[in-house]
Image (cartoon, rainbow, N blue to C red; front, side, top):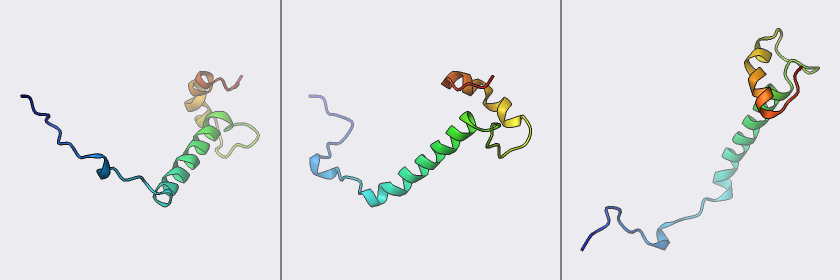
Length: 71
């Protein structure tokens, strides 16, 4: 008779995550995604925050990969 190496925990051991515990992480991920979307899609345009072409050159391939026009 083979025994499982992982102990059985039963269905009652699983507890749901409350929305109050999940909300800060969801907000953090949402803000991070908006910042990344801005950097890849809009930086070095009319709303440039950083001067020069540094961000544009770093994000250039990402723009092409995601379908953002940059030329």
